[in-house]
Length: 168
Image (cartoon, rainbow, N blue to C red):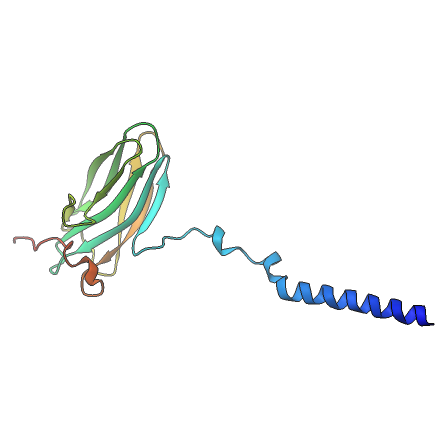
C-alpha cells in the first residue's frame, strides 16, 4: 500500500512537472519564430537580387510634390561589377536609371547632403503613397519595390535631403 502511494505521488509529480514545462514553453513548438520573419528595420524598403542587396529605399518628396529624391543604398557582395537598373515613372513615362556598384562596395544615393541624388521629376504620386520602382541587374530576375513617399514634416532627419522645388 505504501509503495503504491509513493508510486502514485511520483507519477503525479512527473505529470505535473511535464504539464508545467509544456504549459510554459509549449507555444514555442507551434508559433513562428520572429527571427525568421523578414522585415526592413528602417523607414524604407529593401530586397535582394542575386548578389546585390537593395537597402532602405525611400522616396523623399518636395513641398510642391513635383520632384522626388530616391534615397537608396546598393550593396554588391559579388565578385563582379553590378550595373543595377531602377525603372520608375517620371512625367507619365517609364524612365530607367542605371548605377554601377563595384564588387564588395556599398553605393548610396541621396542618403547624405554629399551623396549624388537620383531626382525623379513629376512622379505622379503624393505624400504617403507607395512609389513603384523596379530594380534589376544582369540576367537576374528583377523585383518591384513599393517605396514609401515621405517628407520632412514627419521625418525632420530628412529635411536636408528633400529635392529643391521644381521650376514651373
